[in-house]
Image (cartoon, rainbow, N blue to C red):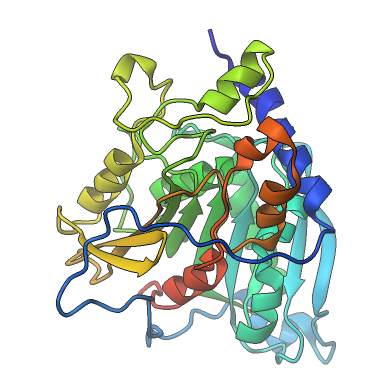
Length: 374
């Protein structure tokens, strides 16, 4: 039987590969053939565009009585927070040059299984974008390098995220109408759980190589969703189940240099709780009241976008499929370097990272379209 502990130890190898590449530099993009992309006439916008005009919800931290004449510290700090008797650690980034009374959006950035907050910020580079676009980034550590991705209550990590948001809104001037969550792999699963349980606080989510929508998921409002996934993912395959690279690690076998990802939906009995990605994306589209059939657009030689429109919020859920993509964050220089530098089967664990689109840039363009109404 495959246990969560065994999965954790195996995926930790992936995290170690990423850590080794965090200080690397250089790299060029690779060109891969498009995978059955279907263009429309005329094509919809390739990228999300526009900014929500809904008013800000100013947090307690915007009050002059909270900070007086003392300016808010900008830059990144590592902080601790006690949640349910446990000390939790997180990184908080506040962009420079912003008035202490200007309400800023928050983006939660959640790491993958076996990884940590430092590796996550190296992969996503959200802080550099936040400096230009003026939003706060909160990058927390999961307990034992993982998240509680079971959509049930009580959930200690959901409680922790609420405490983290409350603490930040008291200390900083935050726009409570614009709180977003993104995540990689296990962090994507956790972002999904937040969308299910905290839809009154989480405005929208965007995930890479990790998405869930269990039978208990019943958000209080439709939550806009953006998803990125590689069809050659060997950790959490596009067609469901646990990946071949992960299974080799679990069984103690060396990971071959060349592996094959599933090319058709995996039978339910072999899914290990991970159904095909298309099924999960469709479940979210149904929950959000979107059209059942997406419009497909080729946005790069190796990337197809599937757009679910007519959602109940007026939003459009977006699904980016990377034809040759692995278990990787599109546009991440760190992960592109891992794929080039790792020998033999280690490179197969991460796989190919496209640099033809930037998940980080697209995620922020998607997020800023949406705000919670009063």
